[in-house]
View 1 (cartoon, rainbow, N blue to C red):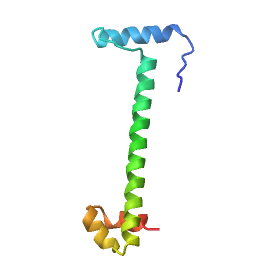
View 2 (view 1 turned 90 degrees about the vertical axis):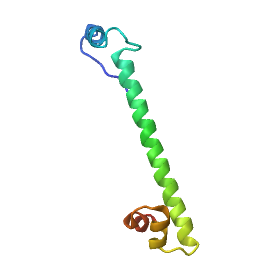
View 3 (view 1 turned 60 degrees about the vertical axis):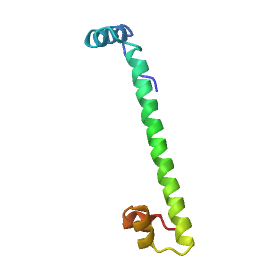
Length: 88
């Protein structure tokens, strides 16, 4: 994701302001910092989706083996509503 300013000199000015706030401990400019934050958030969201998918897959495996939704909820210590929504 690129962020554009109408006046490119504003990026430098913003970086200088950030430097003064951080007492010149800057390792990257504002654009790079925003890009890093976006990457971090995307990674976090991806991990959450992966964990949720794995949990749903495991719920379905247990259900196919004959466990009830209530038993699965209790064993995995997750809400019964989540278990019931995951069962296909």
